[in-house]
Image (tube, rainbow, N blue to C red):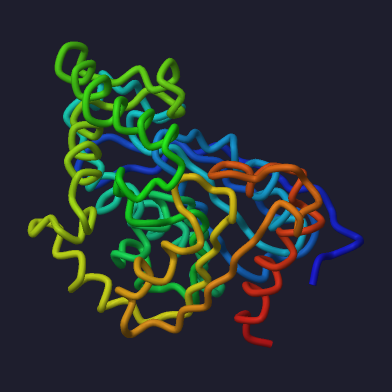
Length: 296
């Protein structure tokens, strides 16, 4: 349950090496009073800097969790997209996500380990990246990112233009995609954009990429999962949750659908769940789900 007598979090900036090369930059937040009860890593969405998750990380920390946020290589504080121009999306999933998870598990080896993944971050967890020591994970707005599955026509056209034409063209010419100008978040490494573009055209997204072994990897996930969908998320509607998380054939999956009305706000969308306005209405559901899995 949320702690009504919460204390502010203590924050530590840090750098975590990635075995394949380079490093990710993160912020570790720990309760300012008392030992943490659990360790949580927040894995970001595509082209989203860790600062989006600051309020949510502080909230979990104020309620007894040690929380790590970080930027993928080539995003935000973890180097420029040009520096990591040859990095693929799968490299974030298969290298950055496990690096953060392993660092947290080593730092807090005696605590229950959890993760919260947003969009790409949740997709990574579905593939089993960084899940080996988890007592459970939450995925928010994670989906099979197929362009034609976007239900609103205007948004489908916009995303199609960006992912099939503008983004790949910029990636080839510049080595990166100016995602800020395209309305897709932080600037991204060019090769990551090209892989995103290819996956977005496949009916099963990366499940149709043989090199990903996605179905096999998802079947290897054997933990508790909470999959959160937002009713006004144009990219990841609640209707997409069941098919995508259906690949977790050996996990214990719970689906949760939230609406703006549940939060008392006019809109949530793909990014809004982690904004501070959700603190009193939606975040307690996540906190309660996590704390239920902490041994007494």
